Picture 1 (cartoon, helix red, strand yellow):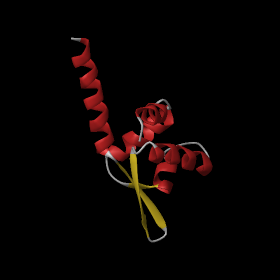
Picture 2 (cartoon, one colour):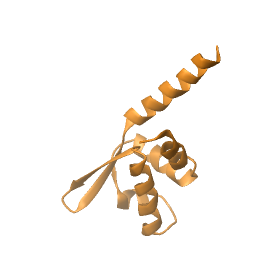
Picture 3 (tube, one colour):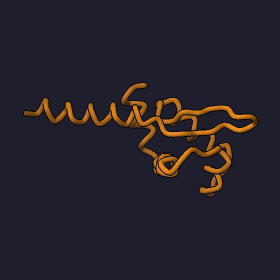
Length: 89
């Protein structure tokens, strides 16, 4: 995971909405897709970008893939932001 990948992933409003949905709990790709008016391929692409940025975990359960937030990356981002503040002083 690089911060560039994280910021790229967060730059899209649909991906930010996916992350917001997952704050309330794990979801399948189908459950996520039901919240959008876009193709399943587009949702899959967004999920792939979020996963590549390590913002999501994905786990295969039977025939479904379950997505959940990787809060560790958000903690790393906050540390980076706090470190920026320290450097300015």
